[in-house]
Length: 571
Ligand code: FES
Ligand code: MG
Image 1 (cartoon, rainbow, N blue to C red):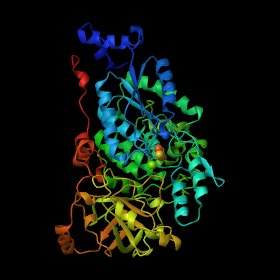
Image 2: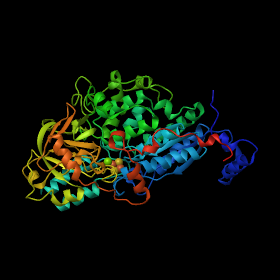
Image 3: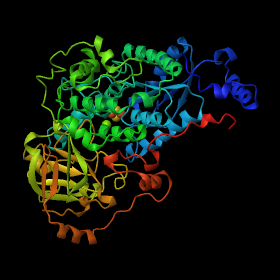
Image 4: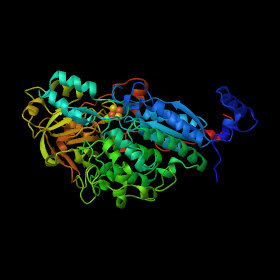
């Protein structure tokens, strides 16, 4: 039986508001028969010419529209702010919450019965999901899909993962400037998001694991015709969601988050997704904390052999069957009764999934790496916790004690990191502070601190690095990220001095500054507090209301859901 449509509160009745609302649709060229009694399905499009990752979403919206029309719905496409990793300053993370508010308020304020989200680049889908969870209007996501991989020096490359290695080659004198220029020209050969298991691909996979898109949708390349086909299917599915009244609150359950975290770890996915899932759980009013990631990760091996943790790109994952292959192999670790947007459970969807191929996706019994690919560490240096992506780290550094080399902020780091007189050895622990949500501001992806040039020349490729920053999903190294609370709000990271010993034991969940409490208390009395860079506007709101990394950097006032304003028909 069909649920009553939310849009009828706008379009039915002979009172003046009903008349005005119908007039608005008629003025847009809709005959009464084309919208009366039909589910209104929004197409929330983060297309923008400023984001090559989302550049194809404009055309993809036409496929969604076709699906909605075929199923008897009324498609209405609308724009929101869009967030592109490469061009947006100071960092897209600063604006994720802004975009989520834009999405949420658009859903609440307009007569949507369901919405299809079109996103791609790192922050766009998380922001859309957060807005959808708070508005709790029936929602399905169409991930944009990975870009075509570039080929350089005879090897398929990912946009981020491989570039970082080449940047080190340039700094170490192993690559010429003209080769570097050739790389620049070829690195991004098509629209679509980064083609390795960076943040965008991880988000897309997690969207599928959460049950918020159709099975198999996440890994289809952006330029493949099957991307358009699945967009059409999502349009049809959105109409069904509207008719059945299935809301995000029925899909984004504790079981769905368990599955999402399991998949994140099994893929060796981006640490950024830890933040997005924590923020989303806050919106969905599901009790998921940072510690859950550590506990779930302890039982989940890395089975996807995809860069940066493995060898392949997302395209190869798609070719062997996409995420359903991963989910099927993970089945014993999943909560299979969780509902998905096609109306079936995770377990039911797995019935048709292909088996592992043994290379791109490995069996649980013979994984790429054993369990524990993600660890949460705590101690006097991170009372709220910090995150280590063990699957992208050097095993021998995961248990390491070394003297700190402290950088006050990114400017300080840029000035001194390549100084030949920097007192640093391979055993040192590089510390960057004032790079968190308030201090960055916006928690930039500075957490993979560059290896000092003089050590690079000695052949050092990894060191322990600690910061209150994030790290690109495409980066790697033994980095302790998201230290919470951050230095700029008085976290103990602000108290570290050059030469202090820092002890990391990622597997045991420990991050300790080996300095006694009395000394730290003394330093705390004089340590300067950094003020936010913003005195007005959105930045000032952000600095005042952003929560710390251990709860996902959402705004404190955005947690949970809001009432539906459409309950009042005469507004
Ligand atoms: Fe947009 Fe990587 S830069 S997904
Ligand atoms: Mg990224």
